[in-house]
Image (cartoon, rainbow, N blue to C red; front, side, top):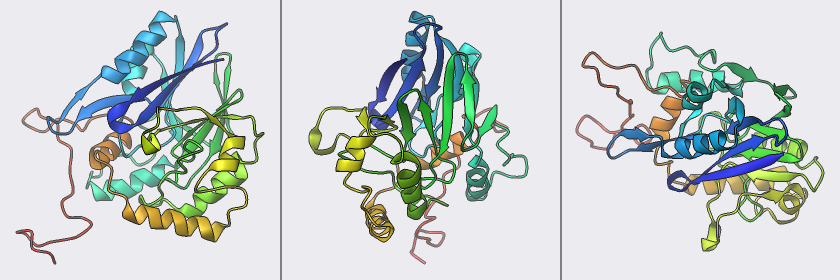
Length: 295
């Protein structure tokens, strides 16, 4: 099994192409559609790199998989689906995320909150076939209620649940995120796997200026993870995680990313003037009056 990583530096996102050398069957995990928030313009720079790699190696892309509805980048799953006739899939609890943010963005009755924007909704314990590849689905809620880890061969693709062994875990302060759920996900469903199991996270933030890394192991995580080790108590982790989250800034592309990604990786429909618009809440966390005076 081959694993090729692509790094989107502006969002610190790692995209993985996983494929069988013998059959050329492949999946892509957590692809990126680039977005410039100043110009409000998308581009396919990252997707083109993935697409070129797939074509150069003659890959048969079966699935564009999402570990969750990302809040820091736009998903490229729909464009990969179009380019390679692949299908899209995400966790079945995306419906809870859609229900929450449908109200935040006032998306109206036409917005479906049943996950139908994706070709398949995945459940914990399910096995997804991609030709000769078997993708075992592990539910790892906490960062969001819909988070999944994909177990392929001896490798885990953990999204925002578990990062590199020197960095820690994903934040849990998004709506319906829960630190106690993440604790159970990692302790019961990831740390229970063999120590030699390889771990490929969804981001690398290169702490202390180190070089990019995107592969560790369950054993290293259990021994060195600064947030969560087997001996870490639930209350200790929840306190640490909630304390860190309270100090974190909102992701730079939060509202654009979530709005796009809960819609299956599709832009909003064009308005009457032919232009597409993202809805951006103003002062939602700290309300003000009409002229910006704090309430």
